[in-house]
Length: 309
Image (cartoon, rainbow, N blue to C red; front, side):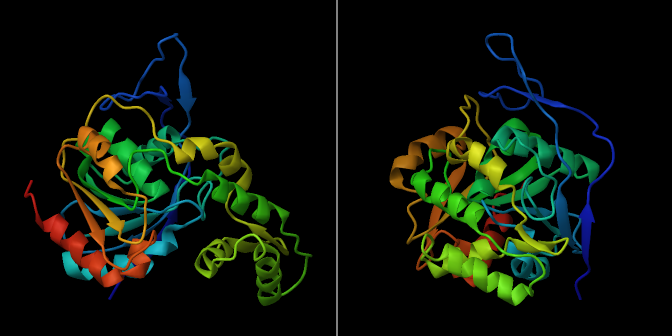
């Protein structure tokens, strides 16, 4: 029996996070060379808890661009059974039920996770991030390594993500969708699908994006903050420059049909994450956990059991 609790963090902010564009791990305050600071206000994050009996650090899942915490619900239930650990799935800022913000950088999203763990009184966690969530997880581990028992990066590396034009086209197509008020959800979804299909012809991607269509005050809208994502797309496709490393156990888990983790990325992975192992799951694309869920769960469980800490 699973107890699933949904929460939305509210209340006054405890702190500001001051970070430079080239942050150094292990410090919350970073000054730029020219004396200026970037100040990020952490935003409240929506999350779900899948409770487990173990007192070991929980698994925390971070989704990719245009995703949400619900992407990992079925996996979370199975991982509770197989590991005994509590599992938390989190909506990133500007996604799902989390707060919106005009800022959408990895430094800002890392600050959100820091606030999230602090408010839940979690001293350590196993951080598992897919795609954009994987980059957020990497940045967080490099900044606050003492809070990360181990790290899993799913089909992403600490490098420039290619094919930015594809994401720009997705955003433009979603912005152009026009749905009248007062129509049933099934009709709204069909209209959105018809308007998106000329630009987004891959069914898997199309249906994934349609999960973001929600009814708000009798009007179907996108729950993701398309404007913020569009303005920060270059930031999301890149990765901050770090000169320090996360020394904890790390797994880079890619799909054999995906090119997001290639041999050209290995030197940078090893520089930033010296204890990293790299695996690829056969017959899996970018959404590794959805394409091969059983193999994904097995590898995660085996990785958690390794490297006793």
